[in-house]
Amino acid sequence: AIGFSKVGIPSTGAVIVNNMVTNSSFGGTPEAPAMLPTGAIAAIRSGNDAIVRDNLIRNSAYNGITGGRNVVVDRNTIEATCLVLDDCGGIYVFGRDLNTTISSNTIRNLVGTNEGKPPNEFDKPHTVGIYLDEHSSRVRVTGNIVSNAQYGIQLHNAFDNDVSQNHLYGNRTYQLWLQAGRNEVKSSGDVFGNVINSNTFVPTEHGVSVSLDSLFDSTDDFAHFDANLYS
Image (tube, rainbow, N blue to C red; front, side):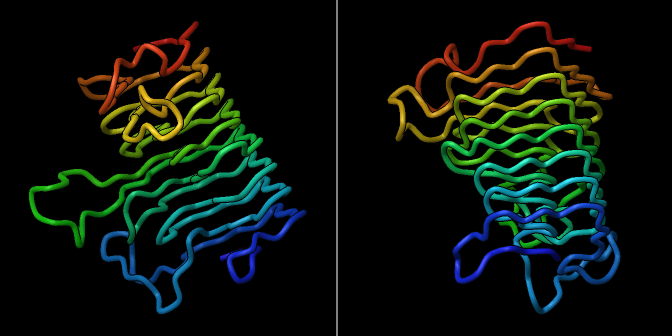
């Protein structure tokens, strides 16, 4: 794995370009995975003020790419992440005022695992192509292709983000999921003010393409939707 941080303090200014990262913290095969003795939060962890571009990531125990603030993540190919740990993404970010762009990446085949989960509590792996988690804001997600994850893109307690011109197809539960489980920023829930424009949502099985879920008030403020194609 490639990581730029020390003692919990992110580095700045990394340029991570044209690398191949395979079997990050991962042993065995995708059919019989095993975590290596040294874990990693992601195959590439960039730190702040970074560029992550034109990398190939294949077979990662946990997230594919994660970073801090002021990061550009573009033109990467990410395959078969989340092979050992769950609740994870091909590209995973969290936190306020990230000022981050995630563009023109191809993410596919995030199968995931249910190993270690309580029986009958969670019936599906939680793998997300592009995962904007816990108060992610000011993230631009554009021109990405995501296929065969459990969820194509998820905004979880995330606000003021721009999701545009992405192609999401064949993801197993939802192509896009907006989920409010906290109300620390806004009393009606911490998903609000997002813009969802000009995306293509193509499920390959019968079901809902886009899901909006809240533990609190209505979902009316979740996002402005315009010019999306639903198949």
